[in-house]
Image (cartoon, rainbow, N blue to C red; front, side):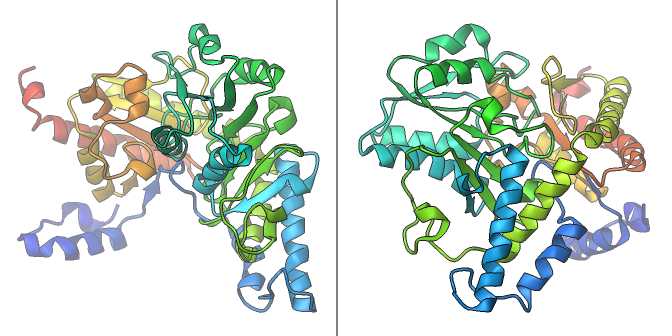
Length: 414
């Protein structure tokens, strides 16, 4: 660490200068890969020609346009291979996971031309699904049925069948929870839904690059994926649409993306996503062997060195890079800010909910009381995380917890 740790601010006016110096002096230990990932060098290199000389519109008939069209279709094929799709034409490029979730759910409703009778989801979905369903239900376009989760954050097996009824039109369940890393056991309910002819959507944003994804094995009709979670740029994603699935466009204009999403394609980002998908597919078996021991080391040392801590979701199968840890008698917003000052980037939950004073709906659904939900931090590792990063972060986390607890009124009573 640089000298900024010992630097003392003399007045409130020094805050901006202090933060600038701190940022310049310290190497950031980035443990927030579930929020976003750095663009991989191979991805950036592949994108650059399409940000400079190869600027043609892929809908144009001239050579520049057709070079862009070829690049888009090559990337489409890479994404199809990444998720096991039968046909590259089943891949629709979007601006990211949120748009893909909106298109999947709203597009299904609009294509029917009438309200959805019932939508089955869970109590721990990402806001890109939760808020869409809230708005549809508020507008009278569907009735939402939510499968509860266990204290470990898994779909409750005993309650799943009661939430899948003869009038269910759509099932939308995430593969991996963004806050806890819990891999959801969706197979049985997807099989039951498929037997009933129900349309199935899954948000696979946090699963991509961390566990194998095969749309045919899953049996889904729609699947959402976001590029910036696996080393591609922000602003690009896909929606997989199984051939024959009824889906209406939400963005109208040109006939791009098989008439499912109007607007000129973001060629450079699409190319980058294709390369990122290829890299993730190549590294899928090796990544867990490297990252999981680092995650386990972080958990082990925190739980052994800091009293009153616990891993949220510890009893469930989780992806290798994510841990959500409860630090009792702390405040997660203070923790995030204090760790940031020490050069460690973490999250108090979903990046989409940052600044929201409400506790995590995921942790509340798992049965945590509000004070414990407010005292939980998400650490998410990535391809660039090293053992040195973890070993450096652990004592700083210990110190930070001690500092925050020293000012906590209930901790003082202990």
